[in-house]
Length: 298
Image (tube, rainbow, N blue to C red; front, side, top):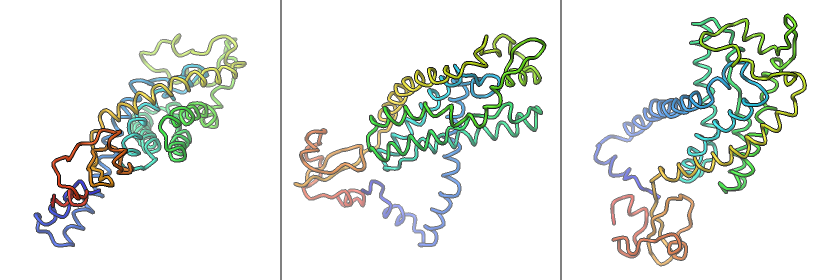
């Protein structure tokens, strides 16, 4: 469905075919990377403001709040982006695109700001990976073709596998150790070794008592709670994408009636148009096609 008058634009520009090809190549080389970095830099700020220290310092990655907070925060932004790509393009990679962009931004910060500049070990400030969770979320949308089923099953899996997919990265930091008679985890000991200004010691010790050693069951309680919160946040942000995604399409019904729809894959039937708010006549003669609208012939 041609909404953009591409033929008219090319004709008005008076560019030869080689010039048109070069212009589009420049768009691909410059515009798409800039758009990618610009959009997902905002996701980076969103994530750092809400998840903050929980997914940054190794001694903050505990079995309670890290497992609860991180999936809830990381599923918000992808919900709106998934709506945009799925509704207008039927492309089921919104979550993967968001979370890979987030990880690229975080690793740039870790390498240049923390490792090269502040001399912090990278494994002390490395982020959690959420790419497997994002792939499951996108695959659920692709297979079910329903945002509601995705919110129930896909987001539930998104949150539940967060800890298992990160255990091979951070499992060593959960090992108990005794330092001067005090029971600590290896992550806590690393926090004491690389002191950070402005962080009180009592805040850094998150897991108290014997939770460091015998707290494995706490992970799944936190993950279940996080899964239900993630379902709610995904639904809210999906609806935010619906609210701000104002693009639409003209769909031609069987009897020539044109209807205004916001779903690229909708089938243009008169019955469907009546149900979803058709625009009578729409100011166009009967027989007008969407291709004619795109070319400016209506």
